[in-house]
Length: 253
Image (cartoon, rainbow, N blue to C red):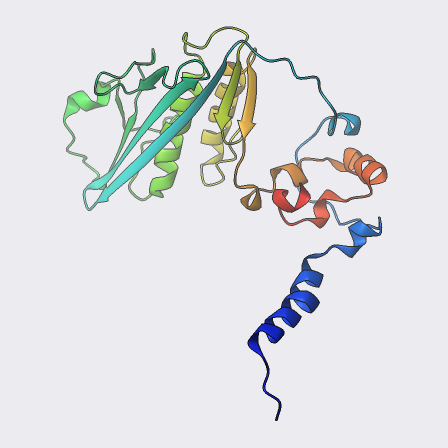
């Protein structure tokens, strides 16, 4: 009986199966299939989806990035968020909350969220009126330890990032970079909360030059599903590719 060499076996598997599986012959031949539409959001004219732009170097580039952590115990949930602002001119323009003498952003909003495990929380009363601590969601609903901790920390982090965009330390006309989508999907947040967060961010970004940097395109379907019916047909007719034939934005790009 002939012994199989491991390298030969692996080569055959990679060459004949894996490479062939990853190749998209339909795209190479210029063919496509038109898939049934899915729930999607309106998009712009198809001619504006892919275009060449002239780059004008801004005077300064700023970047906003938030961070959050959650501590869970039998007594409840404590979520803490922070936000920082940097620029191409200064490594650190400001942070909130400011610690260890670091430059501060001009913010005075809660960066700590408390969700008690008790019907009677037992939390010191002055905390409820504190400008740094919140016990209720943006829609007025009290935070609950029954919630997924990620929903609480995500909410206060997104609020901090949005308000930081209004900082007076960001010079007028400059370019602003946001870590993640300009309008985060936040799928695990309640609809009312997402709506309020989106409306607030839309107001804040009204006259700003903003770029959102999305890193995990393999976990996103926003781009592929953002082309509405008529635009999608025009897109397919022009580029011979149906966005819905891809499972995620990384494959689409």
